[in-house]
Image (cartoon, rainbow, N blue to C red; front, side):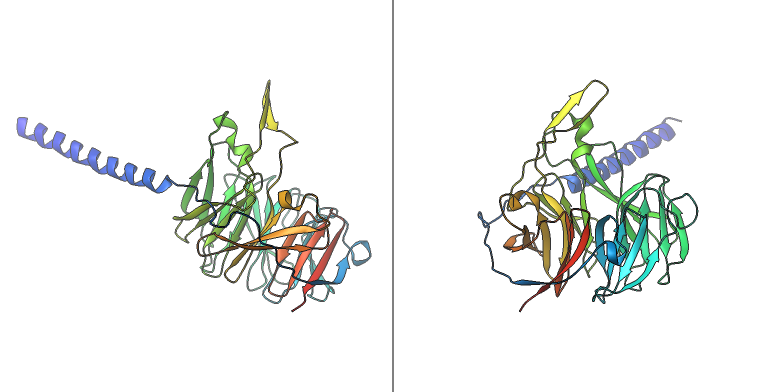
Length: 342
């Protein structure tokens, strides 16, 4: 009996050590260090752009919020005014709509937070109201609907038929969820709050940002309210976390009885995030103040180090960079394609 009890306690002790090592390993993976930029001041390149066209009321756009492009540089616009995603050719010709307007039925939207376009032309839409992700085929027909446990704020599509979701959270870390094509959760990883928080329970208010995925399935995240850029491997391992060239500090919090909000005087940082080849493009709100147009900062996908900046001759609230152009959303009124002049 004594031997049995001894073996039992030894087994429990070994199991405890094993679980402790796993926990220590996971904690080690979550540890991070914010790296500074080697270049300390912005370097501006005089890149010329030519306005090709604008899409507005006459082209059927009421209130555009953000845009995406596919491999053929067709433009997809989320029109908040009509709750549709509208597709145009790279020349600005209307093709079709995705969605059936406002509602709770298949293919209908209430509160679209993000969408992504697959290489085969499918459109994946996040609606936070009922935690839906709706998939449309290339003809605009809803073919799949996934219901998540937590609403998705951002979505990115992987080449493996899987997708990455950033859900809403009330915790002081940023969570990434990886799902398969059947809507089954395969894995998750997270980034703890990168700053010292006066109110840790409110850190989630500062954790919003933009998600992008490159051709190698590396994952990128630019914080909207602070000058930080993160990248993860396809497996969720942190590749780097760097300060951006503007070094925008995290916003101040105003706490009141029953809640809190971000100080409206706090600056914005990244308004959008694009990956083109080996370069990361961030539309920089802080650096655009006092300029006639808007500033884009360019970083290396390899290590997140700053390369250069350029300016486009228009004020805008969102932009998508492609190989040959920059597509902007100006004050929720129009979408403009700016062609790079070589």
